[in-house]
Image (tube, rainbow, N blue to C red):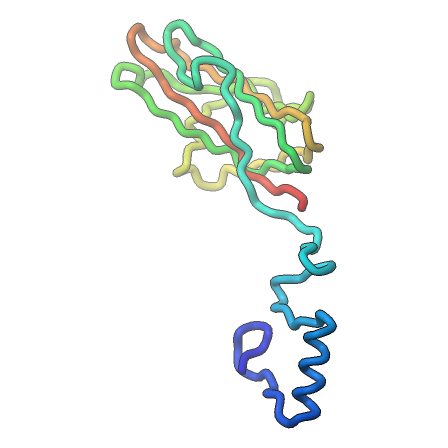
Length: 174
């Protein structure tokens, strides 16, 4: 037999009286759950936090910067209380656009800027291979927008493009 943690040590039920007590407890809904699966009631999980991503939707051209689309606003609106912790960017450049750097003018949660001062920062520092680039964003209530303007400097050359996708990893309350 195994205990809650999966290790050995649980006592085996022996005898008619013990078996009757075990059946009676199960009939009353007193299941023995593992420690990691706590519930307030049958089918109602304990309040806690989960780690999820919040994709930000591009305002223009499906997130593709080109000579005519020079600024894209990315927007996300959580459905549950959310606190962002990690900005993730996916950037794909055509061969002639490698000299352009994708930058952001800032991440805003509602009206609160999520950096120490106004100014552009390189979004390319926040790709999937980045290490140690966590944020501690302010918590946001459901429906409060997160916005971020993205542009390329220098501007994307003619007949070239840069595809950009942005999401924020963070915790939500459940």
